[in-house]
Image (tube, rainbow, N blue to C red; front, side, top):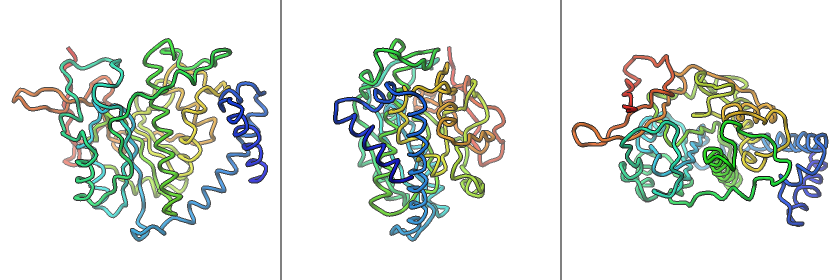
Length: 355
């Protein structure tokens, strides 16, 4: 199966690129059963690769501690980073996990200005935190004994228009379809950034001959209101093939604000998240991003597991000027899930003034 799938990939996908065709153009020119066959076979290849990754686990120089990759893709102006380090990364590192951070962000002032229900008087997040340069983040990593694996916080906006089919375009994101709607284009840009980060993950594993145990995909404006109990996810015997999300604000799909991937689930979903955006599949003909994510997981054969808010306690947040003249974080009430515990381990949300 490995040889057959590799040969099909070489003859169909790679050769199409040599002829000047993109993979998605090749997919759209061939019957659905052909696409399904190749994807089925390449999924078997991924299974083989995943088994190799499991064999490599624990051979890295840090003594085989459980490894967690934190992936952030977004805009520097929305990137709430210092609290993520303080509330998520440092506690995990202190608990014995080998934590690595991978960031890609469009530079300050360069990103799209389209915001869903904007908060008045919002401040630039990265500028507020004074973390505009990678050296400042690296210094935090060294002090906190975690790793800054990849950092690009001044990239330009990703080019995505050339990926959009001119003819026979599949229906995507009907509430804000690209390229007509800027919000839809932003989804494409984020998917491309995530796919690029996943390639960094794969490269790190190949070079270091190890495998991450879990991948946490957390949005740029996520604020962690409480701790992440990683052990509770690792104790799930099927976690390798599952994606965990919050069980609120699912909008006909899954809440994509914060996603926790088992290693196999990440391998079959994230490396082609952008490349297969226009794949001809009825599961992907959706109205919004939440439903699109659910369709992607179905196509890839990955199980979606919604969990209580307390297990993934994040909320869309922004910096605003406080009454004392200092910037403060507030949480957008429209996307704040109910059910946050009131114990000392969790912050009490401060709701943004939306007027």
